[in-house]
Image 1 (cartoon, rainbow, N blue to C red):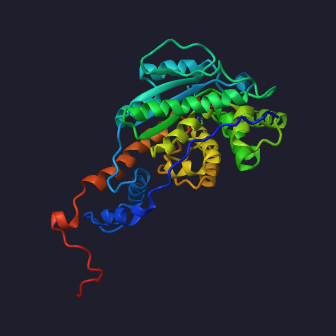
Image 2 (image 1 turned 30 degrees about the horizontal axis):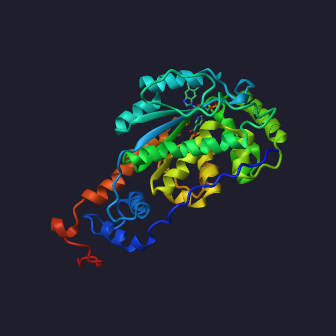
Length: 357
Ligand SMILES: Cc1cc2ncn([C@H]3O[C@H](COP(=O)(O)O)[C@@H](O)[C@H]3O)c2cc1C
Ligand SMILES: O=C(O)c1cccnc1
């Protein structure tokens, strides 16, 4: 068993609960039956509480695709070879991946972070090189990351967010790319939620039933190699990967700056789980974009008290679910800012009494 690194999560400010009444009044003054915008109203309220204002605005949002490789990726845990990780990074940088399409439609920039891809990547203006190591060690044999490497990943994820915040960003959409990372996510989720591993192992990048059974069997061996892991830092060290740890660091740094974190699928949620174990208040700044079509995701989201905005059967990752949900977040802030009030538009308010026939 590895020794957990001592890493201090940043302080996370509480939500501005004192503004609840004022925000609700602002929402209710809009020209609509009270509550008729449903969960967009909850979202608008939460944005206000996060930002500490009755007039929340979303500024300079960014999709952050954290990429990393996994030492056990050649052992049958994924239906795809690890070469796909750098190949997909090239695809992201060329603008051709699913996340690029949805981000373009939503007006979001895509930044790719090399957290720990196994090969060196050529420089590109949209590629941020924060590589901690060339892929994780094989968790079937040893700890995937040293405690120091875990701390470095968390810090560098925080640095990405600090740099974005300095340029006015107040919302991040973390995504990931890394063949084998649905396995690391399953191991982390099982360890931190203390639920059977078999319930946490999904089909990832599309296993058939035989492949799925083999993945479960291999991951049971990984888990047996690292018994009794319950601590978030220890889970990151035991199972990896760099991109999950960096996402967790980014989520914590975002929450510490009152920034919105739009959580994507099963792998991003494992990072949110790590972050929440390091600083539970991170969840105050997290909105769950969607529930993945990969079965175990629902369990993890529910354990974190999340209410996913979308349920589209997506199981791609990359931040695609977050990018697709982004227009809903914008709609929440947008109606609060732009919709006319009853007073301004001269629309009669609810009497509360049904007119007599
Ligand atoms: C072409 C391709 C593009 C992807 N984009 C995201 N993923 C997704 O699949 C991977 C996780 O599944 P597993 O653990 O089974 O390898 C991650 O990279 C995830 O983002 C992809 C997977 C593939 C094959
Ligand atoms: O839920 C996800 O984000 C997911 C599921 C399978 C593979 N990659 C990502």
